[in-house]
Image (cartoon, rainbow, N blue to C red; front, side):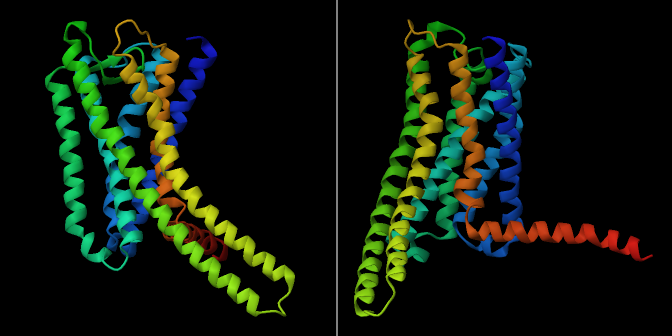
Length: 327
């Protein structure tokens, strides 16, 4: 790689790591400070997702940054195998956490009256336990088969085959790994969120009918008020579609290039350029920084808790200054 693209990739990994740490730590801080957030079942999935993202930002992103900067393996084989083990476990766990959040949202919207009986703390903990078991199963298989190490293509410690003699079992493992993580989660996300969108649009239509009937009854209402009401109806419909597109689109945009590249590189005659491999790896890292906004920080509950925390910190810092000024 030439100097400028390499420098841009270094900056990308570094910025993503910093943003991911700050945003996901903010989510954990909100979760710890708010009893209301802890009382909600989705908080368990949020906690699991933030946990995985923080460890990815703390372990794997610095390793990739050093791999790009030094153009080689940044650490020895034992650490690189451990980092590869962590990446497989944490990435799979994060994907399954997103799938669990989509299932929770589907149950809450489609079955609102029976949500409390269908999604209990015990059910959420069982889903998290399954996520950990599946993630641990692939990670241990990778470790026992010695399929973890430094990959020059991705400039990181990841799933990697050093010896081409075991290509068949490695290819089977790779296909099964991405099918049960990326593909499975994508199918769950599409099913759950499209069901949610269908219900949301149905509710919007009912509200629209009521609003139009009300406007027709109010014959003396000003035309500008009618236009404003109709505009709000349109925004409400667009808002629901936009949210679903963000949930599914961010998942596809960040993970699909990397997954497709990993499958294509199994073909012996195909050579993956280093800059493309590192770019796809950066896209997967970018998902860790966007998750905090997509699932938490843009929601009113988390924003309210975060604002209160910031206000308390600023208030504590102001007291010594005011006391100093009056003494």
